[in-house]
Amino acid sequence: MLDLLTQTTLFQKKVYEGLKDSDWKKELKKIYKLFELCAEHGSDRLREKAIELERLDKEELHRKIEDFLREKDGIDEERFLFLTFLNPFFAKLGEDMNIKKDQWLKNRCPVCGFKPSLSHVMDSEDTEGSRYLSCVLCNTQWLYNRTSCVRCGNNEDNTIDYFYYEGEPYAQLQACRKCNTYMKIIDMRIDGLSVPYVDDIATLYLDLWAKERGYLKFERNILGI
Image (cartoon, rainbow, N blue to C red; front, side, top):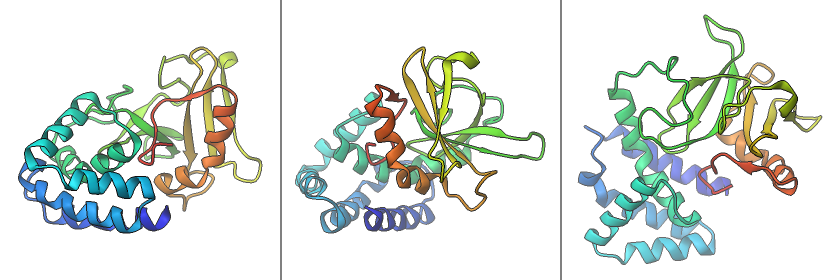
């Protein structure tokens, strides 16, 4: 899994560095390199999906990506491929937009409209313990109420619980008993060297724990977890 993420991250970096604008349609041919990487480094199911998509004509592949952007969801393997491919383009789009991210305070990304799959807490110049949500598609980060449920907005202390493994308190689950939804919070004040995107995957045991107790994750991460 980590080898796959390493390879796809390098792919995204190379695509991003060569971008002149955020139009993914003009660069659709680059997705075939991603198919090759996933066929070589991915699971059997991801390999099969990459080969299946690679065999489509460009018009059909284009339509599938458009459908994904409209529905904002899909089966795990297809979702992984499209999120990975589209990320550099929407990251570029976000940089070109004039958005007041510290005033957005919503549970959808101001750039692409996708949901956040993760949040982290850190001290800023103006505020101690600011909480930021991170978009699953473009990685845009924006400020959100630290004590509120991301799904329903509930902020009642007696219905919001926080869970963590005793040996790794920097990774926590914020679970709302009103809507049975949770989101992971990486507290970078506890571990300043933490990389939220990586630590989300490294703390899969928290997701399994929450699932066993009937909580639903607000948004799956790029791996579908």
